Structures are given as structure tokens and as C-alpha cells.
Image 1 (cartoon, helix red, strand yellow):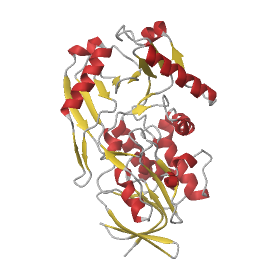
Image 2: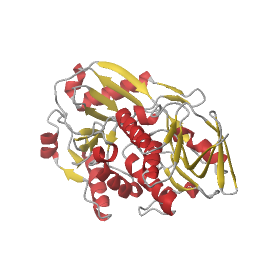
Image 3: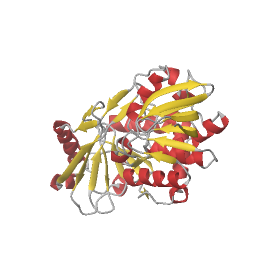
Image 4: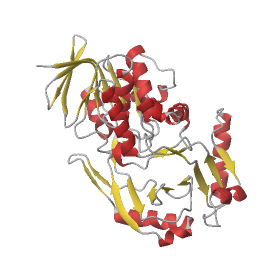
Length: 368
């Protein structure tokens, strides 16, 4: 016997849980299926950056709108999600890097945005007193910050259930068919019928799109992270390397979380990923170069998680190009965590009105 819902969401990461929550709060009956457990992959293991800084231009309006929701996150999901307003700063290590930051600042200001601010050498070392003295300037977004990825996804999961979402974990979607305006999705827990389908499948979102007749060039990736033992307090903002791959932050308990773009090895068939220790060494050397205090740090754990990226490093957001009553939000290319709150609102707008007030055209699936 089939389960029926108004909307079926596929994928239980932050995008899926946020979408299910917002759609349910619009008064629709929502089911969500997740083949593992909520936050099992990218949403639970990412760096937790809540960042508008250095966003691609098409993403800036969405990122700013999402940041407004982050600053009211407890009202949205009943949990502070570990969100801290620390600021984020990109660091230039030489004059060439500084020129790149100057060009970036001019570009963002020309677009009418004011959240990125160029700082010279003196202010750079006021913000980052432990920074190596060879650095020459920075670009800062003072109201950015970071949050706890796993706790955030769990908060959205709890809020979705409280809003009435039928959330099913260990439930794999295995087939998609639409007849008479109704989707029938076969799952490992039996068929579910719904008038609308929302694809938030993460690294597996491309398979869902392909099942709808619109394959995309999605690449599975495995971002890596390291964490140190507790260190004396030495840095407040999240630091981004401009000329070398680096993102790191000191957590409230003193540990230092190091990421920034070096990737491990994904295995989507087995739904596992592994770290690349040689690349982790490069990350460790970079952070020690920029912050000499880190030369005494002890790495206590490293991990990776499965994500996905599109060729232009922009996500897919919007309606299906082949099927009515279907929408996509996947391929966030290792920087979708901050967008999670607004993606839920966008998908709820699309499902209930067919439109979004935010500019999502650059994220259409058919751009490839």
C-alpha cells in the first residue's frame, strides 16, 4: 500500500531537511526519504563555515539572504546550532595576492554589495595578531562566522519532524515515475506517492536528475578536515588562504579545525570516503607557515565526507527541465552549508508558487 504526501523530498542533508521544514510550515504534507541517516555525508562532516566572503557573484544574493536567517537561527529551528559570529578573513601573502583582493573588493562593490571590506597590513595584524609577518593584507566579512554542521543538520531534522514531516531514514529511493500528475517513487520501505518531488540528493542528486531524463556532469568529491588538540586562544575569525588552499578556525573549546580544499577519495558505490595523508601534510604545512604557533599543534583526528561539485562550482537550484512537479537543489560544490537555511525557503516558494523572489536563474540545470 502506498504512502501519500503532497511533497516528497529525497535526501536528508541540510538542504533536504531545510526544504522539508519550510514546505511543511506552508501547510503541505511532506515525506522525506534518506538512504542513510540525516547528515550522514557532506552536511554532517563539512567545515561549518557560515560565509558570504568570496562567494561567486551569482551566489551573493542567496548567501546574504541566508545569513539573515543564520542570525535568527534559534528562532528558525529552536537551537543555536553552535553559530558564532566571528568574522571571516581572506589573507594575502604578497603584493600579487593583495592586488587580487583589491580587484575582488572593487568587483563586489560595483555589484552594490558592502559585506566585504579590504584591510591593510596594520589592521590585518590587529585582527590576526598571531599571523606570520610576511602577510600584507586581507579581505574581511565581519558578520560571517561558523557553526556546528552535525548539530545544525540535526536541528533542522528535529524542526522538520516537529512541523509534521514524515522523515524516513534508512529508506532508499529506487525508482521514479509520474502518471496522471502524481509521482510514484519506489523506496526500500514501500512506494510513496506525491504530487511534487524535491531532489536534495547531494552527491547522489545527479542520479535522481538522470532518472528524470536530465543527466548532469556531477563529480563526487571528498573534502578533508583535521582537528588539533586544545591550543591557547590565538585566533578569532575564520581564516581563508587566498594563494594556498586553507580554511581554519579555532573552536570555543580551543581545538583548531583545519580544512580548505584538499580532497580525499570518494567511493559513492560503497558510500565511503578516505583521506589522502600526503595532502593533509600540505594543509598542515600551510597553516604552520601562516601561523607559527601552529608548529606546536598536535593533530588528533582527520576525516573526509562525500560531497559533489558541478563544473562551474555552482549548485543546481530550480525546476526540472523535463518533468512538471519536480525541483532540484544539489551539487553545492563544497560550500552549500551556509546556504542551507535559504535553500529551504527557496524550495518552499518554488513548490507553493512556482517562483522564487531570489535570482536562481544562474543555477538552472540546463546550463550545461
